[in-house]
Length: 447
Ligand code: SF4
Ligand code: SF4
Image (tube, rainbow, N blue to C red; front, side):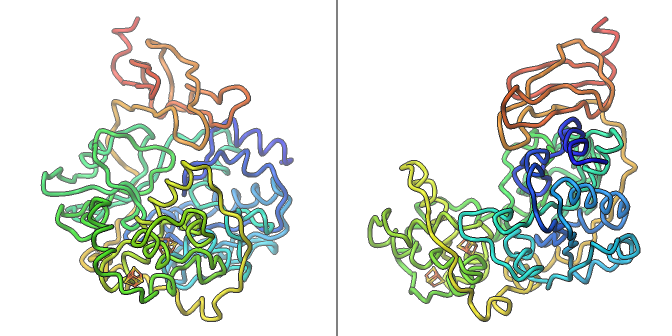
């Protein structure tokens, strides 16, 4: 298939980056690169999606990689994964052509931060406040590339594979229609909903607290991690800023461990100095200082708050607050790549160690096997904005019957966005400015 044909199908069938904010893939691939990296690190402990998809759908993944390489004119494809994903390796190895190779990432966190993945797989650092294409690299995750391959066969993105794990009786990884609620997800996987639990949307480290179980699974949902309400990770994620600042003022000993182990700092983003962010909020405003602007470079990985700081301060949250203030003032970071720490590779934190320190020891071993034989879904609410850009524009009306895979909302003309498709057969029962609801069994009512 030719480059333009590939990009058109990716656009038509609604492929967006599955591993991050959902950047539309047809725009991302409209470039030229030397290398495409498949980010199969899945470095958030407990998530088991990409490693199992690679094992089950290796052919699609490699075909998606081939399409991505053609789209961006890349001569090299690298699948970056951990050696412990042995079954995925066994599946993928015989499928690779001579322009593709596997790179074994160390089992460290955050191996899946794309800047760190690139550094490990190619030795190159992405400059601060830049993106991988600036050094000729495009990174996509496994689910994105599987969706690319399926788009070539005319299959739109209508499902999402997601791990449900943690304090549940049935840890499992399931492929579900986009638009089901997290409540439905828990019920259909045989897991109880308890008032004693808290819910994280995404991985345990970088995921956000889920306050409404009726919110819906989107193209970018990666996990549902259930933890007791008094779990240390829940406390860290929910502590108010006033508390964080009070602790920072009282106990920060300026030991610099947060900076010495900061993954972005050690690959050459030296203006990101979390200990200086703490100093800044303790001793006054420094919004013009290059060091404070460096907070913009923080990836939110959480190594500083979960592992480095001996006195439980959260430089990550402080950086988030500084970033917000800088953005509101229209201040941007400008700076260059500095020398990496000669020991950068050795300073990355072993996954098991950080998981143990973050109180995940009891859940770290959970397999969450991939199941695809699930009960029928009778209702979905498809969010109109599951991607970077503006919300999609509905092309259906209440009462319209739809089949799974039908286009229901399209990219607004001239805007950044992604097409959306029905994820179940049924009837459009409701449309508002946020979502399109499709229900099964209402067909007669609407005639
Ligand atoms: S690791 Fe903790 S105590 Fe040390 S400088 Fe950073 S925030 Fe302060
Ligand atoms: S969260 Fe902390 S460790 Fe991670 S990039 Fe930001 S400052 Fe560095």
